[in-house]
Length: 124
Image (cartoon, rainbow, N blue to C red; front, side, top):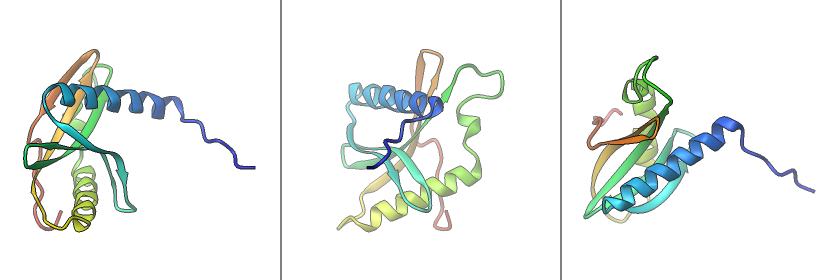
């Protein structure tokens, strides 16, 4: 018999934020391609298409900005891990499309979409 893993409260809240972000982006015309793409190198919360562009989306949740906003919480290390996961995802595609790294910040009840929130070089 296999034990059923239940998400922690933080995982459940994160999942809700990702769902909110996915709906937010869909209302703005993006087509969701994948959720929670994980590799040993990193994870991408959402992958979507906006026209011909493949968009890798980091979702950040903050109850308030007392300890810094959601964007400030994406460290250089986190950006490298997202980029590494994106490279792995792209390796499985026959042709590499134009790509962009976006962030959807959820602070309180408000969502903010930052297109091209960060860029990565060939070193990650």
